[in-house]
Structures are given as C-alpha cells and as structure tokens.
Image 1 (cartoon, helix red, strand yellow):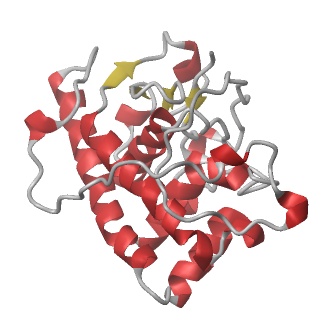
Image 2 (spheres, rainbow, N blue to C red; image 1 turned 90 degrees about the vertical axis):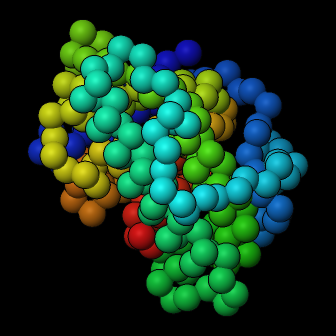
Image 3 (cartoon, rainbow, N blue to C red; image 1 turned 90 degrees about the horizontal axis):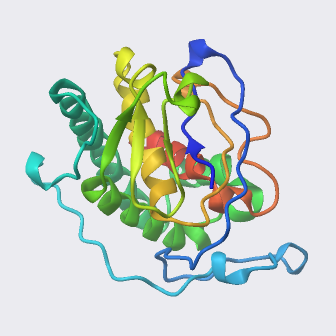
Length: 244
C-alpha cells in the first residue's frame, strides 16, 4: 500500500505525486443523503457513494485542550506544538464552513464553492448533506488520530510532499523538511485537514490538487473526472478553505 500525499508548497512546483492503487476496504463514510446521479454516471461501486449513515459527530467550539489530541510520534516538542496549532486552525475552518453547508437554502457562495470543488455533476445542493457528514468525520479525525513526523530520509517527503497518509488507517504524518520549514499557516492547516480525510476514509485514494489559492501546487484537471471529486481529499479541503 502506497501513501497518499498533500500537495507541495507553491514554490516547489506544480508536479503531482504518482497516484497509488490501494486495495478497497469497507467504507466508513458518514452521510444521510443519496447522491443525485445521472443514469450514465452511476459508478460501479455505489456503496462508496451512498454509504450507510455513521454515528453523529459532535462538534465542539470551546477552547481546544492539547491532551485530547492524538499522539505525535517522532516529533520534537516544537513540531508537536506546530501540529496542534494547525489542527486547531483546521477545526476552526470546519466550524465556519459546516453551518454554511447545512443552511437551507444554500448561499450563492456555498453553491459556487461546491461546483468549483466537486464539479457540475456532484457540486449540487442535494449532495451537501453527504459532504457535511464527511467533513464532520474529518473534524473528529483531526482531533484524535496520531500525526507523526517524517523527514527527508522518507522517500515521500524527499519528493516534496507536505504530508502523507495511508487511506483508512487513522494515522497521518507531516514532512518536517517541507511542512515544518514554512511559516504559511494556511498551508500547514490545509495539510492537516487534507491528510485527516485520507486517514479517515479507505476509499479516499484520489489526489487532484486545487492549489489552495496559491498556497500550494495545483494539478489539472481539478477536481477530476467522473466520481473522482467525491473521493478526492482536496475537494473537501478546498471547499472548507473557500468557506472559512
């Protein structure tokens, strides 16, 4: 199994890390609405698009408590502190974005971001419930999973990625040779959110990158063809950035 990565910083170029083929596991996605799919676009594995609802995730807006976050294997105290700050920032984004996606009707800004990040087929108001469910899972994942530290000795990190995860394993890593050397708080928080999405869902094996409004390297096409946007960690990350 190969790792899935966060995009490189913008100054590192626009190259896309090679996609990995990951053996599918049972989906653990949260969501209560089925997607509106044109007959010609129904995927072969509908269970990955309309999974059974998971337990509700309760979001907390109170002051974060460090000891409740996941462990940080291989990190210095300073690196762990920076990871915690990135997690707090990303959770703050989620707390701003999720209510906008739960509103009825959706605002013009929310609809525009859905279409930009999920494409004309899936970026519709009818799919907002499914997307919100997955974002709530990401909030929980950010708050609990271990974020370890790897450096240039790791082949993925040496390639310029900001972090990596093995989909569905509930663990992520940041690349200290990239992630820890930038003062860009948006890049750091977006990397944490992006990786938490890969870590949460075994079927999130797609990497098409938006570029995070100039904070990272982007790829074309974005958000990707077919059903790719629904399984693309960056579609969710970029949606949250747009609405935060």
